[in-house]
Image 1 (cartoon, rainbow, N blue to C red):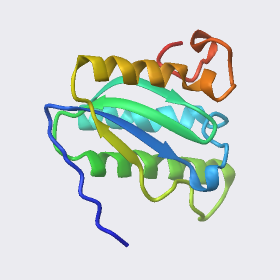
Image 2 (image 1 turned 60 degrees about the vertical axis):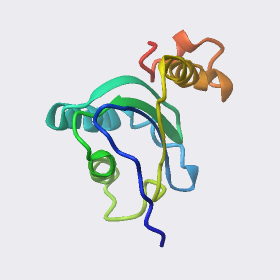
Image 3 (image 1 turned 60 degrees about the horizontal axis):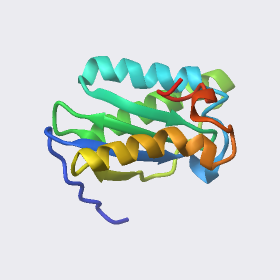
Image 4 (image 1 turned 30 degrees about the horizontal axis):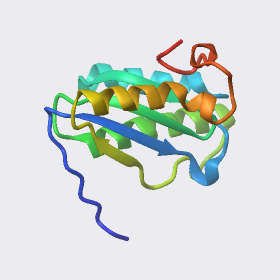
Length: 141
């Protein structure tokens, strides 16, 4: 397995994409557990959640860190959700997430606005709704 090196700086905003294992459509159905995990670590790790969207098999987050531990933060959030989901479904194991995630450092105000638009229009792009305002699993709602 390769060792991915990520550029981490507490002065930057990150666009992140996380995908479920085999693109299983579980995130919307268990949205409450996912947001519980995201919010609990937002308080503990002190990061700013700027924009987000959750679709059945993936999610996009736009966050600003207050420290340099992005990989650790993402591991904690995903692990927390996985444990809560297994408990709810009464499962002892099994993968929930793909091993890696995609990240992008926001370069400037235009890049930030482009990614906020991308996040909010993602449910429209995938055919889940006709208007971003109608998708209740996003920061647009």
